Image (cartoon, rainbow, N blue to C red; front, side):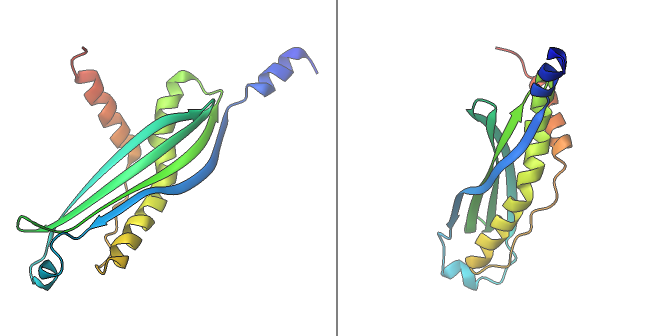
Length: 154
């Protein structure tokens, strides 16, 4: 084996899931029990966020957060927030591929766990589960990139 073959093998791209875990969960029902006897259908607002941070050399934490806020009129029925994290080993990828991997591939792996955590938390609170819709993380990532490109640089 030549030195070139050894170097090429050593620098082969690495992408491994180390762990997926529920990092944070909170639920508030500030107007219970009175709001629970209301007959009106509540409005539901769902917000999603993705963040990626380095955890160690070649290891990154990618978190997807969902906030579900249900209201009747201006009164909160419940506010649930879950943050699902994943630890990924990512090495020897070209720099231009790191953004898409952490903004698309990693969230796609973590998101099904987040959906289950949100539905479980809300069910345990005594409400019908809220099932988060499937998300196109590629479209979400591309939209964020376009917004950053359009934003004035400081």
